Image (cartoon, rainbow, N blue to C red; front, top):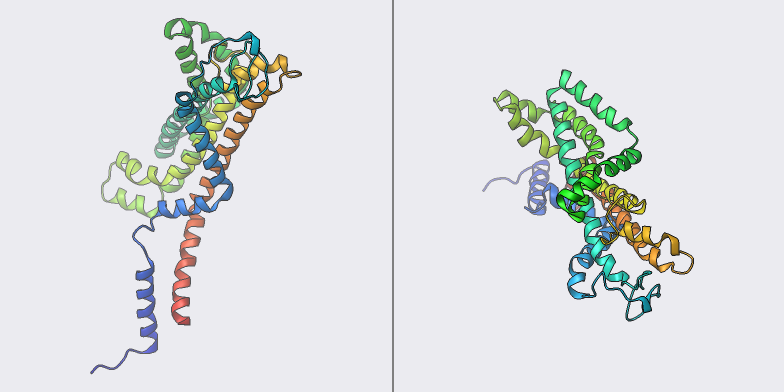
Length: 333
């Protein structure tokens, strides 16, 4: 019969057992990220509000079947009622129906412009960070040039110059949609490019990238398999911020009369139509303004939550705290 192990060996054995039992297969980086995101109360509240608004604008028009262009002069400028839950405009058109329809366009503009900004910024930032040298210098000077441009005046100028030609070529709705998305997305890629470049400059010198390079991995494989997946966290956060910025930009264009035409009721266009009736029909501007405010605020809170959840320093600190708690509990028992 063998002698029992010394106290130190027994403690190490118990510690390993506790660590193996306490470690679940699902405790990956993304599950830890989701757990940290749920603990961020404002981010969880923002996600819930945004989900409700997305479901409302997607499903709402199929449930609330009032036409968006039905004119009733007898009911013009009425406040909220059972017949018109959000009131009517100066033509007697139902505001709830128009907001549900316009919400689709406003959110679609935000998501599409964000995708353009993220794709362009990621490509330029990755190329600059990976290649370095003259390529990096030229791309960063191009980025600085775009950053120095006044965004809103340039946005207004481009929309004013190309709006009519695209309307004739693609129709009033699709032409303006493509123009607004391309212009907004094309003026939002610079912060993403600088962020991705900084991530690449840091990650390409890490040990795991050096190991892949020493094993003969091609530069494209190094980027796709090793560097880019580890830089995706800040890009996701930047993407959420770009959605909010694109929604505000589209609303500003529509409010200034350079966005979608009057028969396409985006939230910004409804605000533009309501600006001359604020004294005796405040509900006309209150509800679309509130929708824009809640959407942008929710997306910003989601971005804050994702930034905290994807912060590797906080994830590693929480993981080390959990590992230190295991030996302490084992020693205490």
